[in-house]
Image 1 (cartoon, one colour):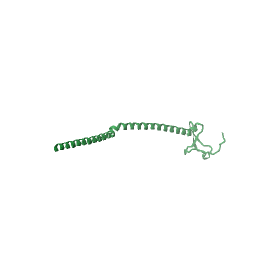
Image 2: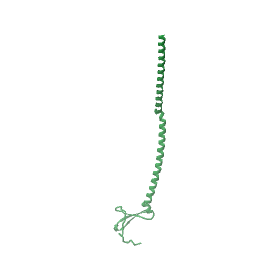
Image 3: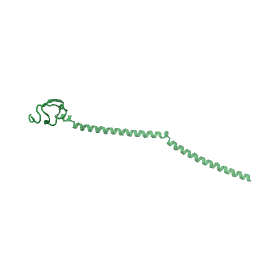
Image 4: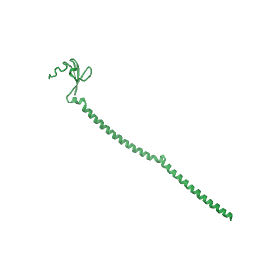
Length: 145
């Protein structure tokens, strides 16, 4: 009876040990599966399509921003060109005015009193240039028609 009781005790403990071992094994297997899932989720091969999609989206945004920026810059350049054209001395010449320069210095003549007789001048008109020599200086002859 003692041997039979000992055998039963050994069998009971062996069964408990087997159950505990299987339970521990299942827990470890589940832990390994969880780690594998996390590794797969973080794997470059899994994440690469997401990265590619993000890069494509950013590229599209950059292209749109670049195109909008170009349009804005073109508009600004066109507006600046219009302002420059409005201020252009050539525009003034087109209305019948002229610009006169001292041929020796290239300076713009602003005061007739500063131009002595005998000075050589260059006058810029809308369609060309006239070279001349001063015969009277200052305000002499200002009322002569």
